Image (cartoon, rainbow, N blue to C red; front, side):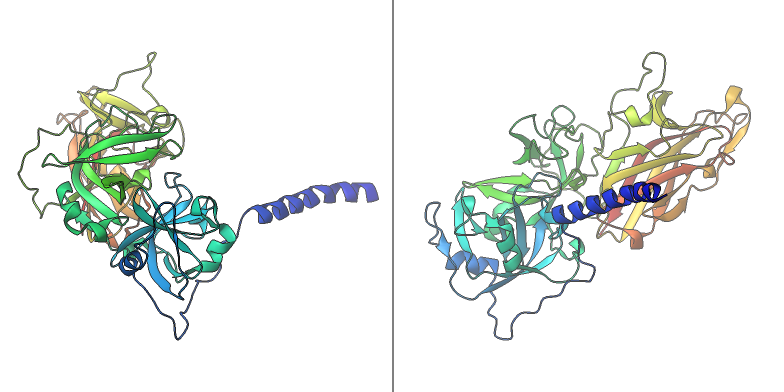
Length: 452
């Protein structure tokens, strides 16, 4: 009996050892909201003034910060996706700057949107590509050792990206209007397109990928992506849309660093025209994303329609998941690409990789058709329901009838989503139940727009 007891205890012992090992590898996130108060006699400095104070720094001779100074800023770019390497970007009301740190996974404690109070004394300003950056005088390539970084950088409150001041541009040439105030801050470029959309990936298998982003006025800017980014192998989105990115500058040239795939959104999948100088309607809503499953008509593979989870030709660059696996498929009927929700099955389509943060109105439009065998039977489109960030929505009721000629005929539906549920990392589900979906439904041309 003693032997049996010892053997029964062995898995628990191994489990305890495993958890102990994990504790040594990873820092636990804070259980309470972090707070940091400046000393009563603290002297603060802005990023603009810090740059001016350390203007003598060069690539070979950094400037050591010997005064007791504190910088209050907010993180605008972290290393979550792997596209930002051993650094973060911070910004305040006067501009932004790179902060070098000799560690990976910094976002687990210092995420985008986090307000930080930085004790600058003992750090230095070095120069790379003719641009100043915060670092450590004794660090490799002036990267701040992790322990020292934690000593100097204090979190204050929870991370909240909604508190980031994001400037918006639809004309790339305007970026230089306030060059010092814009660089290394998070900006939004609206109504832009990738010149190689749908053809190239964000980055090749080695090194960096550099691709041009163009506006409606013919101006371009380079988007630079590391092959270590988790979206490096994704195709550049097709059509016109919006890009959220950190605006960098290297040796006098502007370049963009995209933080995650979700920062490219609202691309309509339509090849842009020649451009010109017609301004975009300022009252038009933003296209957050638009999905028509590619410009090519979907066809069968070896006699079968592709399962949704194996399909890759999405036009929006978002992530589409069949939660129940091998239930949903992608098809074409009457020349319209669509997602097939088979009859009498529980179906769950999940869409992720887009942001709705800051929007005060959100409108979801989509097309629905029913497969009404031999033009017989009927199906209420309301059988297709959904959730937006956990909040339910419903397709307006419309009975599709075979005798009325509705077999595989698409109808457009529009629903207002609750803006109160908007979030930086948003999630949309389309759902059917076995009881309600008796004939089979098709979903096509999904589009989400919003206004801020």
